[in-house]
Image (tube, rainbow, N blue to C red; front, side):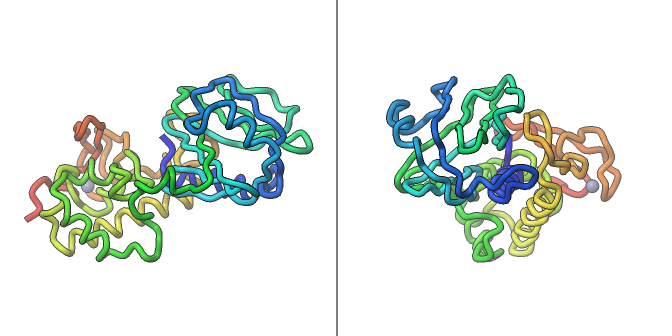
Length: 274
Ligand SMILES: [Zn+2]
């Protein structure tokens, strides 16, 4: 599933138009909606009518949502399990999973490829209609270690599921939570309210390190259709079960925490911290 670094990379590519064309300034002439359930809000017919002739002004990101600022209103896209979004010309052969296509000026097409079809599209007047439940952005300069510490102490939950909870912190998924906990030297099942101030600060640093490394590598390309990232080659624990920890050489272990496969190093991330 695309997480913060992958979604941010997609937003940047669409904004800057590297190797293609910048999306800002382009007008959406019509849409091809072959998987109607992509449209979460409003109804299909209203979406089709309102998106027509809208000009894209900017593309940003909030949590794992892509936020398209239009000349009127906003379009939000959540890629969910397997979504990818890219600009191509009409002459490029159509991929098997490009269920939703936005036809733009000059034969450009914004294609939403989604093999598992869990992606969602919203058209709203105010992005907060969709985003209001999200917790803070982990890379926001205002999201200090102290703020994370206070939030951790307010909850009595295991770190892994808490960090995956988009209401607690936005943008993290299975990859970056496992990597962040390894950078922080914290076991995924530690209770959030039992962390020391120092441990909470290490977690704050670990989250930033994992995300920033992911961004430098344009995200990770694994078991989904997203192309062009290579952070998967830098994983320290994620999907490295049985391989040596790059820090202490202890074999990486996999456990299930809150129904999610979880990878950690028993050497660097011991269960008992105190
Ligand atoms: Zn280790």
